[in-house]
Picture 1 (cartoon, rainbow, N blue to C red):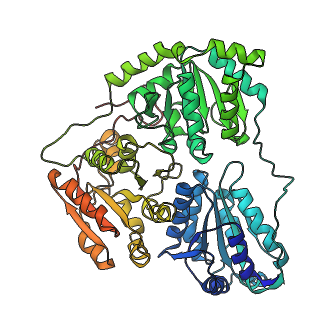
Picture 2: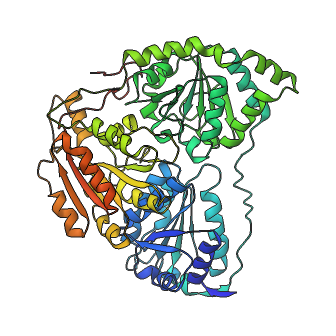
Picture 3: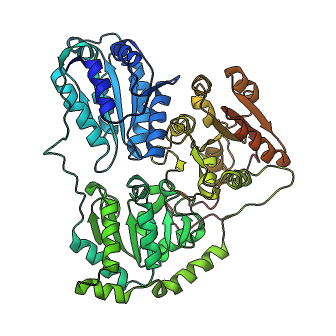
Length: 571
């Protein structure tokens, strides 16, 4: 076929199986939007801000496991999108972002709405392309999708000049891609996996440390089975919530700065730490020199650059998570090799029973909890009630702050890809548009954004998108009239000097929702929480549920920055 660049893009997106894209038009992408008008392959959702477009594509990718796609224009359109791209990059989310650019001949002339998108995005994309020849466009699109969803996932940018989008050439879309300089290792070395199995057989206090790679690789079921057969307790990072069921007896909960007492103590006391797709983030390790200092450490990751980057490891295993865990399971049941027989006869769930009983005592000593109140609404209680109402029948997105940590601590996650949150970058304003994107991946689920009164205003304009496209996101605002997490740090470490964190002057969220055409509710008494949530959920419309919670409630436990994990503030 002979097509122009915009037609090529549309055809390529169709061939890649794209179902929905999110975007905002502008001068540099007018040719593309003209072709979007004509096509019937996929839906386009017009967001009201470019940052929201990328966050929505991100939420779709997290909830579906597919590549999210966003289209934005040049100049300020691109710079508005950078926060969304960086958010996806930090959390290894597969995106293809198409940005418009001024014509090739004008690049470098400070033309109207020109910006160096490739230069700006280089630190926060897995790869980026500037298309200078129409003949290269089909190959570049194919490479972009391949790079985004192979190895360690991530966002890829295609910067498309306006004249290239109008140029005409023969369209031949590659069926496969071979990049000599990019060959991710997916098959683990069997000798490394055998060495890990022998280490498990020799350990007394093994602990699994589950990261976002378990979710990204769709290996949660395999990991659950491996841990069940071995009887190894586990902790989850923020990005891994739902990898294990909250009710799983092996699950000690979230680890790190706001992790459970049992999870953090397990990290300090284990003799073998098995990292499954985690990256040893500073919010998890605490003081690096004290981190798991009594343990041998195994690190399983598809990205070799992550292994040994922060923590020295004894058992490095590079490979796709599913392949590694499947090999571990095969070694448990395969009795045809001497090494497998010795492992199988030496390890059983009973071997680690004393260790699990010890950790149960930690759970009983300091369980997650809070002080109930008959007068004020406790935010943790709201999340518990939401969990009781919805359970596994919801996608939970969050913004960033106290509400994010309470959601991770108290919502009863039972499945992967049910919890969408900005972990690495910590992006306020992520939750609402991410929830919009998740709706297009799971229209059969309730779509909830748990947010704060600070975060919700970051992308509040997306109320209009939800009304226009009939996207029923229920925004549960835990309203404490503060930038809550910053206020908490000011309380603990700055002698209650609440410098510019008081948000007492606020909009009327009920009237604000109505002005966009959505529904608004305000809740001030505990007895009204559940009936109001039920009304919002039943409405099947976009809602703001403004719940006035205890102003000075803090997220606990808390490990102060730079402290070891066993030095938790518990009260």
